[in-house]
Length: 313
Image (cartoon, rainbow, N blue to C red; front, side):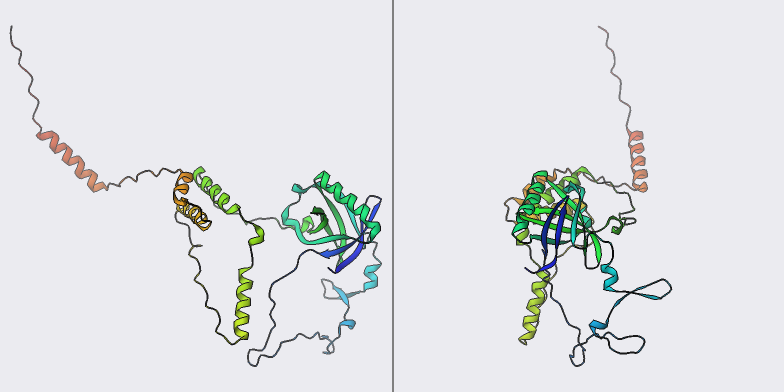
């Protein structure tokens, strides 16, 4: 794998020469823009606004535009002269529990490779120290013209660095949560737990990009002049939930059936353990009035019960 950055890890007074390698790769299919009428490629040209001439890459520089619209040129020499200690160094500033890092901050991942034989010993020392402490290292580094925050952890026998967003780059989730107050019953939570348990046992290696495969099939068919694959009917669902309990029960049952588990329906009923109360029939005011009148009429027609006569001995 080709390195994208060479430098060193600063671990106190220990310096570890390393190479930075991308840990992930993008498999998404990219498209070109074309003219619909004749299929010609649409290309972008960088043109100067002042003279209208196309400018080649070596002649393009950087500038900062101030609020008044004035361009302030900034050269590569200006940036290189900045007193930035992390320009060629991954500077470890702290060791913290992994649970203290919010996944919301995590960004691109990189493999850190020991650069040369002398780097093997200090690299292994840091790796084993991270393993034994069960902590992650927080570091500062500079990449692509800006200083960034990073988190170092161990994966197998390799030190991995995740780029982290700065805390002030995370937006507060204001106005995102539902504004309406909702009460969730224990029976609903039990069914949600059952659904989570059923869906939780999946190997991540078995998951794949269905959309990318469909696009590849479409491209192959068009290249051969064959008709495009017909779309499959989307699964029902995703609409408004009328009965949450029924939706959860059906979800658990469907998940178990998809995994070939026997007795999915009976198991779901046991997990739910919900007793549905009989619905009382509503009585209209007219029916209540008629019922009272009938009761009074029956009471009026009923003769008094005769009292037994006493006999003398």
